[in-house]
Image 1 (cartoon, rainbow, N blue to C red):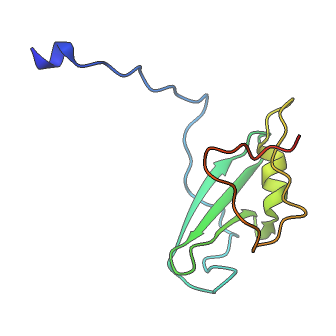
Image 2 (image 1 turned 180 degrees about the vertical axis):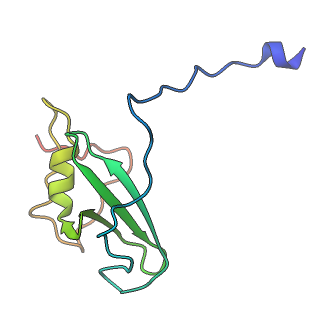
Image 3 (image 1 turned 120 degrees about the horizontal axis):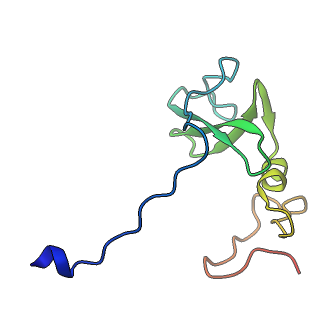
Length: 110
C-alpha cells in the first residue's frame, strides 16, 4: 500500500549516444596545479559538442579541463558550455580572491 501512495519519478532521459568516461590517452595523469596523483578523470562533451576531459584533484580540490594534452581555460569551457541565446558567466575580470556570490544569486551579467 505504501508503494502505491509513493510519488513515482519520471524515467531518466537518455542521450543520443553512449556515455563515455574513459579520458583520452594523451591527457595528463597528475594534477597540473599540485602535481598530485589522486585525480579523477572523466571524458565529457560540452554543450557545443567539444569532447574534453574533466580532471578533479582530491589533494588540492581543483578542477581542470583538457582538450587532449592542452589544458583549457575555465572561461573557454564556460563559453563552450553556454547554450545559444543565453549569457554565460564572464570570468575574465574575476580574481581567485573575489567573493563568490550567494547560491541563490544570479551569476549572469546584465
